[in-house]
Length: 192
Image: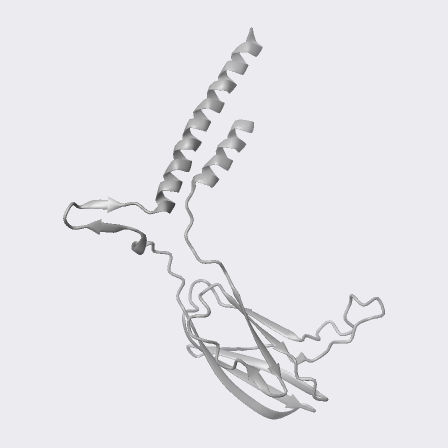
């Protein structure tokens, strides 16, 4: 059992992984508007998230964020500046009260232009509409740029990641053989 576990750990360490580090982009909406209403293009990729914070402290003001992409749309719950807490300070009086809307862009089909509409309400009457947008980039995992071929010698240059992955795989194989041979030696000793 230990051998199986050790083998799996070594195998997982030797597996190269490509991708981008997921990030979160924050948009604040206050009495002066959304900051920024247009998220800079290239800021978000598929799998990333955007947080929309309601920071308008004007009396009885609420916010709804609407996202539209390729004909489909979704709305946030009604966002408030503050949510009342119970006496213990850790629980909300109204569990439906929110002051932030988090949206994670799907990792498979979110690439493209997203329209963002900020709907501000005062006393439940629409008072202001702010439009914005973001272009979400496709999260491409092809690693074509890391390998270059020299036409003159048709020699392939390996990147440092490929060299490290190959080294880890070789060390893992040697470690696996050593561990397995020691286990065989231990089992023979126990039988005698």
